[in-house]
Image 1 (tube, rainbow, N blue to C red):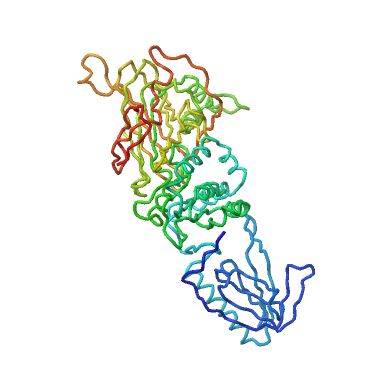
Image 2 (cartoon, rainbow, N blue to C red):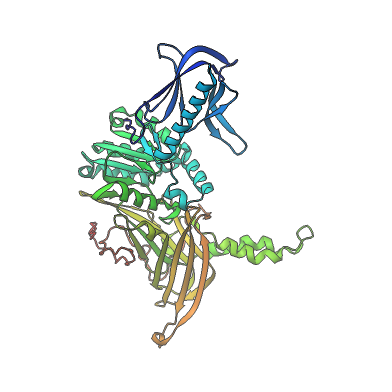
Amino acid sequence: MDTLPAENMRQHHQNFIVDSVTLLSSNPPKPVSGPLSATFGTASGFPELQFFLEPDGEHSLHFDLRTAQLFRLGEVQSLCVSEGSETIKEKTYSKGITVQFKEEEESSSFHDAFEQWKKEVVIQGSTLPNGTVSSSKSKFDDKIEASSAKMYFHYYGQLLHQQNMLQDYVRTGSYYAAVIENQADFAGRVVVDVGAGSGILSLFAAQAGAKHVYAVEASEMADYAQKLIAGNPILGQRITVIKGKVEDVELPEKADILISEPMGTLLVNERMLESYVIARDRFLVPNGKMFPTVGRIHMAPFSDEYLYVEIANKALFWQQQNYYGVDLTALHGTAFQGYFSQPVVDAFDPRLLVAPAVSHVINFTTVKEEDLYEINIPLKFIASVGTRIHGLACWFDVLFNGSTVQRWLTTAPGAPTTHWYQLRCVLSQPIYVMPGQEITGHLHMIAHSAQSYTINLTMSAKMWGPGAEQGGILQTSSCRLDLKEPYYRMSQPQAYSVAQDQQPNQLLQTQDLQLPSLDEDGSDFIQQPSNDSSVQIH
């Protein structure tokens, strides 16, 4: 793996002579007599303070000035520490030494130099050994609350969660096929892996002949990715791991192609699509490729009495009038609505759908970041059966628009299950429809600072039968849900009888279809699929 050179940082160094140091990490503390040399510089690619413990310079102690602190203990004595980890209760330090000077003037000059070099870090940005990161507040930090970001990066910094995604063989196999089948798009090209995680997609790109891959990962998983890539040296020599956010890092060259796995539940959860778009605008050459290229959210009304009763029954606890002498019924209504504010994540039988799906298209190559802050999707369906509609079922797919092969990754009901499953928004008040009746509404999603979306769903059944064209809305039901707080219902789809005159997969859009011309807002409905598996993108 490569190390990027430090850019825009001070290239000179600054030397001081200290009388002695004491290594506090030893037990007992170990004094080292001088005179010894202390040097400020950027030889390692980032601002650091280096103490040479022997005249030959072979043994030295390094302090990264991005995390180091210096405290004055007396006129000629100071304490230098480097931050380790931080917990809720305390901050720990990974190493520390006391520094002894001969004269107070030397000590003051050393402290002045330390502060000046620390300021340089703030002004110029802190440069990682394998990439440059701006230390100014990033766009990511402006729109995402710190507690959410901390939890998010902690989650994806753990190997067990990476393993869960790697073992989603639909996901991983689709990415592998999309890359290897389109080696012409990768061979000899510069690739940026956005949110690289374990680095698996970077390794796929290297297998496809990429000239160089920059794997950008903000969580602690970057360290594991470095180890994994180092364990594959033939591929790893063409991969550079950069620890930082795509909003902050600087790269030495533009990318010919971006690869990423930015999809969350309902495609947009976790708001990583915005980072993918920012990476496009910052790093991708004009007309460069993006894998994936297009995403689609599919929606259809569904009927599922079992699910509705299951959710409604959760609130029965609050109907108790004598719970240890306490009447709980005052909170029943609030609890009832609370359970219906959770989107349901599970795998369901596609025969539960009661109308053909409509789709909302997001073209990653043209969509603006701001377009993802608020997504408003008009809904219009024609019921194929007479039933109670309990809500809106949603799933997504993405297209890898390769030069050689166009490959879809789908999370549709009835297709092999992925770790995304499907998602259903359940109405607390179902609506009744008859065959041929029109169902209208809106799915309105508003991004929030906890890296997710508030969902507002409205569904209405219009007048039907003779004179319906003069009629208005017959029934309306709506709900508000938080995509951040789903109900994970992982049971397998139950066996349902097929509705009369309805084939099992009749209402599903398959992944093989012709895409119409994509407007910037991507709001066009997808037409019924053709037998041709190719996709035209204009």
